[in-house]
Image 1 (cartoon, rainbow, N blue to C red):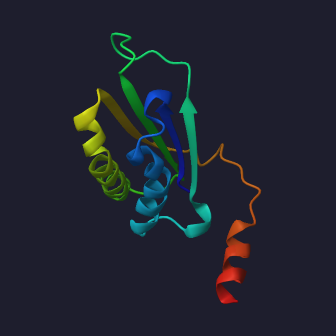
Image 2: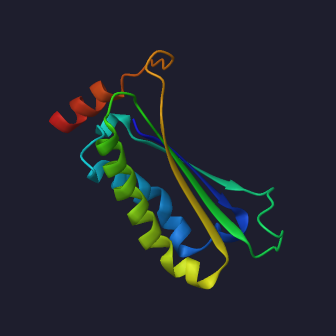
Length: 131
């Protein structure tokens, strides 16, 4: 963990800040030092069918959900959330100055009892880094 889901409205998908967003979220999550390399996943999706606010076609959104494994205390979760969100806002500040933009970010803690995995990524990453 974390697994990030990034959704952006189609009307901003080609903006330079948006093209950098996936990498930025990935790097920001790792830089917290809280999450293992093999646990980081970032999904990026352009949403073509949406309504925002007063339905004006210039209205845009970025919605990010960061799902993390259970067991970290609130201080640690907040530190990670603050670090990632601050980086996202810094990246998107120029876009926010050019366009009506709603940015939402949420951290969700996954259930420890109902979270299943079949994953060998950690093993493969360890082998590659040793080579």
